Every structure is written in structure tokens, then in C-alpha cells.
Image 1 (cartoon, rainbow over the protein chains, first blue to last red):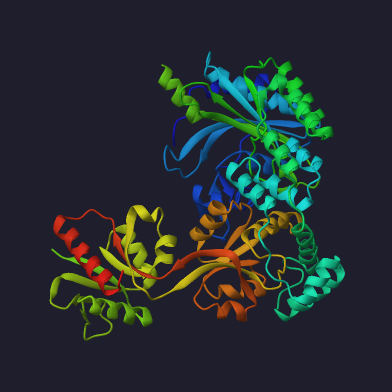
Image 2: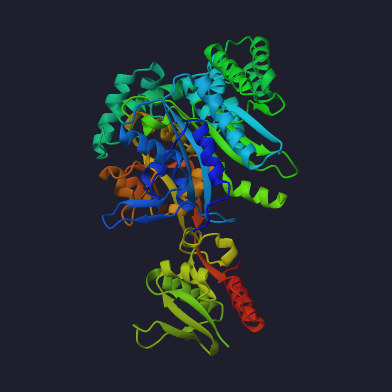
Length: 373
Length: 234
């Protein structure tokens, strides 16, 4: 076991001052929730083991999911802010396999602008405490603003979903945009099916598909249903004749190029929307409210930037995403955070619970502290 | 000083391997007792032969337990982490052809490509309360192809140790990643390969371990590699 970082005591005090409850979760966790939420890619980066009863377990690779699961299981009331500091375990090519993280998960606060701003401010305060005097840059992105742009451009649902998924990955976004500008050809459909699809006859198509499924011995309810397949086939046939217009393409490009100090970010978005003749509605209002709330925490305009293309390709992030890095020759991300309003429902909460949180890489901070001293 | 070459211990793969080696002037003198798993190349006391199951050979190469081996490229890429650092394909042998492919039920009329599958996978959780399941014995290749190459994150792999093509009908998975040579098993199970769903075109290969060895052993490995390449026209 690596030793607890010396700064841990000060961090615990900071959490207490900021009204976050310390929480402890077991090191050994069921593996399924992590693989379900983050994807199979995580499998080779975590330490897996099996219980005698055949359950797959892992050493916790992070805190957000266990803290949320713990919250759901305890049926605790909200809003509630949980603070943690402990070891996480990951298989890494470089660096240690166990290292400390600290962070706060803020669950159930309906005032999202306030909660978002507090999360950014808490993360910033934690790092400033550990690295006094060090200049930090905060980068913000917003999944909701991106989705609002897609909706305002009038893109069909299938395209919006595809682009929203690619948000945050330049390579995936490039590929998706190229496909939309010039859709790949579909496979040939046989005559009867092609006709039903062209007519948008969902019921007829579903009946046809149900018969084929029965012949193939596929259950009509265990996986994709005849209605699922019919719906998507009709959508796909309709999209075949649509092209992403040059205007829409140009608008998306100019949106993704927005990179501004937070103080000017809302007006940059307004200007973009006006130039492109789009209305971003509620997403823009929420963005502006959050920007004000962050400024009210005293985070200067030169510290926080909004990068319109910054996102995380994970489907439970819904709004704010952010990271904090030390300014310098080799900027390294010291903290990452974001809003995950879909996560608790995915993990089994009966009612939707909004959440926002951040995590700080204490090993990276320790390395910087050592380099300084 | 001698080096060890691991060869498949049975079946057609064994016969074809022995044929190629004979053509390369490296005929193996088989032990009189079929149950013995060690042999020599005729007239070459410096080349030992170990017969192993094809699935073990990749692992033995990776650990440096043998110097050379004949096995499928699929098994090398699947079995070894960072395989290129531990092994090198020195000759492709022209037999044992098989493709590792992504296949979905024929009746998924709306799915022709990986991009389609990405859409379906993303929507799946929302509609069914679980992730799309992929049955395969190729965990590593599947992850690299789905997550690495196509940026598809949200799916679950369910391990399948046999009859993978039956998994969709059995209800244990939605999609499969499996090996096929003619496609007939897939067709019989009413599955179709996606247009861009070929993960790997595999065949039997002569593979060298990248372990440390002396100059003489190194020269011997190079000699065998060159002879086999000449015999296979590669």
C-alpha cells in the first residue's frame, strides 16, 4: 500500500469547511457497474477478480460510481455532498498501479448552476491548497450546449445522437461529420421490405420482421424487438436522401472553434447563434447562469476558459465537463469533473437524481510538489 | 546449443505444417510413439520440435519458452498483450485461413455497418435496461476493434467458449465476434457479417519469440525463417 499523502489532513479540513460529508466505500467492488457505465475498454485497465460464488469483483478504479451506489443503497435524502480521499487501482503502462484520489460528489441539488459552480470552485480550492501560488487553468465544456446546437440546426434525431456521442473526440467527430456529408451506401433491401420502409409502414415492417425472427429462432423480446428494428430501418431510409447542408456544416465548425475566456463565453455563444440564425434557448441561459455563478466564486476570467469542443464521450455526462491543469511547460490534468444527471438512474435509482462531481489526481499533485521542493 | 520450435500437435494444421517444413528442407522425424510430444528436425540435432495444442503455442512464444512456433495470427494477437513487443510473424504459411468477423442476425435489416451497430448499441441501454451483448472468445480483438478502431464504448462482452454462432438464438448475446472460413456456419445460423466488420484476416504463421538469445541461436532462427519463407513463396 502506498502511504497516504501528507496533504490529506489539510484536504479533510477543506472538505469539512466546505460542508461535504466524508464517505468511505469498500476497496472491493462489484465490477459490473463500472463495465456497464464506462464500457468494456475499462476491463483491461482494472484489477478483476472473482468471488467464490462467481461474482466478478474489482479493486475500485474510481470513486464516483461506488459513492453513487452507496447513496442509492442507503436511501439517503438529498441534496447531499460526499467527500472522499482514498486509493484507486488501475493497470497503467507507466506510473504506479495504486494511487490516491480525492473529490466531492454533489447529489440532488436542483440548482444546477450553483452546484456546477461550487464543484469547479471546490476542485480549484483543493488544488490551490496543495500547490499554493501555482497558476492553474480551468477548461470547461458543455454537452448540453452542443446538443442544443444540433437540435437548433434541425438535424434528424439519428444524426444528433451520433454526433452527441462523438462529442469530445476529434477523430470520432470528424468521421461522423464525413459520413453525414456523404452517407455510406446501405445494403440492398429486398423488394417487399424496401417498399414497407419507404412507405414508413412501421407495423407492416414489424410483422414481417417478427415472422423472420421466429424462423431464425430469435426471441422477439429478449433483445432488439421487431418494432425496434422497423423504427430504425424507416429512420435510416429517410436519412438516406438527406445531406448535411453546407450551412449546417459551416455552423457546426464555427461552433466547435469557439474558445473564449469564461467571462466572454456566453456572449460568444450569443453571437454565434445570431450569426447562424439559431436559437439555443434554455441551454444558453443555463450556461450564462453557471458562468456568473463561477465568477461569483472569485475565479478570474483569465483562469477559466470555455472550449466548445471539449467533452467526454461517455453517455452519462449531460452538461458541464471540466478539467484543471497546472500552467507551465508540461501542463498535466490535475482534476477532472462533470455533471452526470443520467448516472444515478442508470445505476438503479428509482427517481432521477442530478449529480455533479470532480476528482483530483493526488499522485500528480505530489509529483509537482516534490519537483518544487 | 539448440532452439525449440512449437508445432500444432494434431489435425489438419499439424499435417500442413509438417508439409511446409518438409518443403523447406526441415522435415521432422516423427517419434514412433504418437503420444510423445518431442521430436527433431531430420539431421538437425540443433532444432528441437515440441508438439503443443495450437492455442498454447502463442502463449509459449510470448513467454519465450519456445523460440519459434506455428499458430494462427488470431491467437497471437488475442493471447499476447502488446504482442509486437514479444513476438514477430516471420512467415505467413498460406493455410489455416480464417477471418475474425462481427456478425449480427440477418433480420437486423437496418444494420449493415459498424456505424449502424454504434447507433444500435447507444440506443440499446435506453430501451432494454442493459448493454448490447457480444459473444466471443476474442476479448482483446473485440475490444480493440470496437473501442479502439470504431469508438464504440457501450457494449458488454460475454465469454463464449464454443458454438458462439448459436448465442443470439440462445438469447445469451445479441451480436457475435467469431472466426469463419467459408461463412456457411454463419449463414446456417442466419447471421450476416457487417460490411466493414472484418476484424482480422488470419492464417497460420511462423512466429518468432522476441526473447533474448545468443548470436548462434539468432542465426538459427533466421535460417529457419528464411527457408520457410522460400518454401511458401513469401
